[in-house]
Image (cartoon, rainbow, N blue to C red):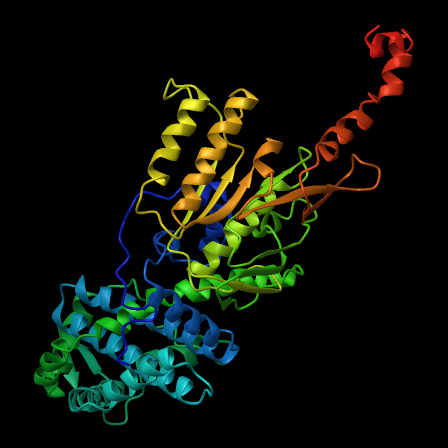
Length: 500
């Protein structure tokens, strides 16, 4: 396998942002990864979901390699060195004084070559690398071993030695500056430091910073040094050498993994777990949680299990309001997103099929901008999701048709479920309509479970036939509206409730 880039060979297509990023609160996670990856904007990388199964598998293998601190450390050092090399190259590009331009380019090439060779050495010393990462090691080996690289690397070394060993001695004679042979003269900077420093200097204070420009005298001296050191031709040849494009792109692409792992390390420090998912025909999640909620740290996050066999198509989740149904749906969506990006997933263990896409529709408030009612808005958003090409997707629907009459909402809900199942899609439907949860071929009921007092939420979502009592009893008990309590409050005895 040849090296195709650390993200695989799929070219990400720019497209409108998918609803899943808002529906699943994924923007919270992406924003945090961005803030941890200082200097890099991962927004585009993290919102472009791979379309090809090969890309997902490729990235998952790189993610597995990155679990090694040695591998992550090697890439982090490479990125840091290359950032410096790129900065030096920019200094060269935007400098108009030729000798200084050449010197910045030489410095950039030195930093770049050291970074490439260090990365190769570090990865070569790692064991059990995936075939995908070994392709990069092979690419680095062939690049460093090439005749072209060897020639300019040797020339670079010679030029650096000449420049580093060259000192300038000059004297001021009346109205002119006279260059002299070095002889036994001591550098001006060292003489000044020795004469005026109270204690030994720890750094050369006369070294130019990256943003400094040369004075007229320094520019003239630099030009003289180039001529006297016979560096004109080597410098011209080195100016034709450029950094390797795939290795330059690697600096940005590797942030995709480094930013994610910084996020993972932060979450693990707070007690949350991530795991490398397995690819399978059925879906199984152990101790999954809402990672966006956990990242906010606002309250305790409850974990849940979930399993879906090959024969099961849709899980309809009902139960008490505020019982964790929507959070559970978001958790599943987040896990599917991280899996599709090739990342670790937020749970203790997971087996996940490769769906062609992840689709979502979460209820939004009516917007003044459109001037349309909420039901119309929902239907408009549903329309593109229900196209024929959306086959074998995982679909997450949350509280559809809440403004419609219960009977109408039930009819529309069944039509939506039937459509997606006919398209060989699987998914989750969170609803307040109990009739949608009636178990039939491919449809399974889940319920937001309550504690024994029948109104305290446990935030556990369990397989259970939809029972109207689970929902109604939570409200009736909480607000003292049981049969006996209502009789006592209204004071009409049994006749009122017996129809007499």
